[in-house]
Amino acid sequence: MTAVSPNRTVPDLLDINGDRLWSSLMELAQVGSYEDSETGLVGVNRQSLTDADAEGRNLLVGWMESAGLDVCIDEMGTIFGRREGLDPTLRPVVAGSHIDSVGTAGAFDGCLGVLGALEIVRSLNDQGMRTRRPLVIAAWTEEEGVRFGTDMLGSAVAAGRLTLDYAYDLVDAEGLRFGDELDRIGFKGTQPVVLEPPHAYVECHIEQGPVLLRDDVAIGIVTGVQSISWQKVILHGRAAHAGTTPTELRVDAGLAAAQIVVKVREMVDSGSYGRLRATVGHIATSPGLPSVVPDRAELTVDLRNPDDEQMAAAERDFAAFLDTLPELQPCSGLKVATKRMAKTSHVPFDHRVQDVIAKAAADLGHQPVTLMSGAGHDAQEMAAIAPTAMVFVRGQHDGISHNPREYSTPDDCAAGITVLANTLLRLSDESADESHDELTEPLTDETDDV
Ligand code: HGY
Ligand code: MN
Ligand code: MN
Image (tube, rainbow, N blue to C red; front, side, top):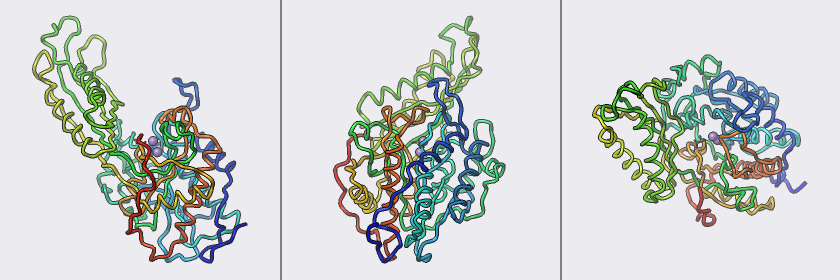
């Protein structure tokens, strides 16, 4: 065992138990599992505050308690597990992610970061080790936002960007209210939701993209998260007979919806908005009958851009396009409404924390690449209140995610959590006065992909 620093009883490099991590990941993946017809694989559908999410939450709480953590639940249902440090007066180092999932998920998105932090605690317990600062694991509520329409919800309220009342009043597609669902599953906690800023926050997550696989590296150091814009567009036309209504007399909400889908792809292909990505993930017309011209359509538009100005230009031009939709109809009368669902700017991560990750990764023999995250993460909310950065782990199958084909190997998962472990231990060693004011130079030019 290498030397133990005076500030802690932990060796300079901590090993974790990769098999135990893997078996926890696979066990949690059984909760909310389903037979995916598209891939023939077992997928995961554990959307937030559903019974499946409640089952996953209770499994996690049980594991945390068995690992000797003090577990508490905040007013947003976020689960915290605290392991006391040698000096309990020092602000904790927090590691976390989420265990809620989209409807067609794999086993790793979010879960790797939560169960990886739990594995670090289990390994410290096995070796009878104590860190200087307290360690806290966070499993944030409704990171995905796919049920209640706003992503990173639990961490955004904890960081003070969104209010508890706003969150509680969000409703899902069936009109069920977030606050009531939190109550129903028994996770409306009493811990005040606005979080005391921790000493630092580090999240380990699968990359969910192709960069690490392309560069043949297991570990990525994340420099920040690109901007995100989610909006719902609601279109009102006029129901009419599909057979008897001449085209020139139609106000076709379905046509307008299709024009939006084509328009956002044209905006991306135009190259006028930098590395804009656009997705219409949800589109529905009503009454949805073969012989009726749709009188209503709704769709979601997800825009992403690493550059805030180019995102603003894209949003501006998209709004201007929506204004022209009525004129594109053969007959007047189309009504267009929009509803903002989520909006976050590009968030840069703390250079010093990135440095600590880089040194831990190098000490473990990795040559990580640095890259910006294409996906949103709870870390982007924590970055507002504490020095924050992320560790990415390589995904297989082109890094596909939000799909049951999402996969990372046991070795890469263990490698990522070992880097996380040694990052947390070093951050945990820092004394109270080691501020994070100075920003060191960026590590290296980040990979040009998000
Ligand atoms: O949408 C996202 O980027 C994340 O998966 N919530
Ligand atoms: Mn995630
Ligand atoms: Mn996700």
